[in-house]
View 1: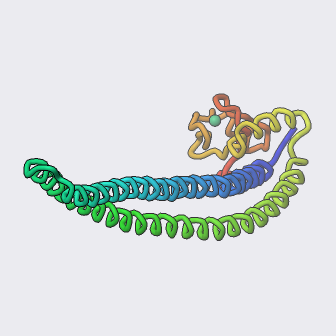
View 2 (view 1 turned 30 degrees about the vertical axis):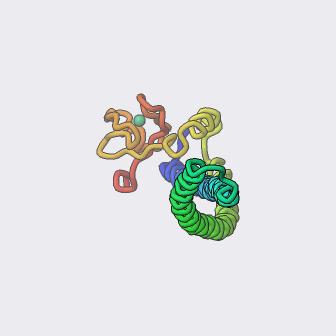
Length: 238
Ligand SMILES: [Zn+2]
């Protein structure tokens, strides 16, 4: 049973279109997934920034409490100076007070440093929050864009699928099942245009006999890849 090159050429074009549409339909969800991963990472950073501040605040509070206790102790020691029973005891209390005062100065410096660090952490947190908000806004825009595109692509795919069903009516009945199976597996490569006497899909050389059969619109398949062969428009007998 004969079949024209135009039938396979049309089918190859339609299958190529379908492959392209499916690729584009698949790219939207991939982009969204990547966007979501980026958001998740930024969310982790904001939580980390928040935790770092909380920890730094606890540490600063502890130091401040320590300072308060030491200052209280100095006050207590000051009271004890008046009740000292001996010069030695008086001197010991004095020494203790001096040592505590010195230690308190170090603590005050530490606390100051910690408060400065908290300021820096607050800035980092603000930046992390801003980055997250920006990414979320971008993601919302992208989602909308992709949703709109998907609708267009799906409509286009539906139209091309209908075109395919129509074109498939020209596939001879006796090879229709083979064609279906092959086109489901290899899409546009189920049909192959002959280029310089070779199969355009797998480059297998086509015998002269097969080429002359093709010119007579006989149904010929590539002996290697199984594609339904068709001649290019230039090779067709006029
Ligand atoms: Zn081939």
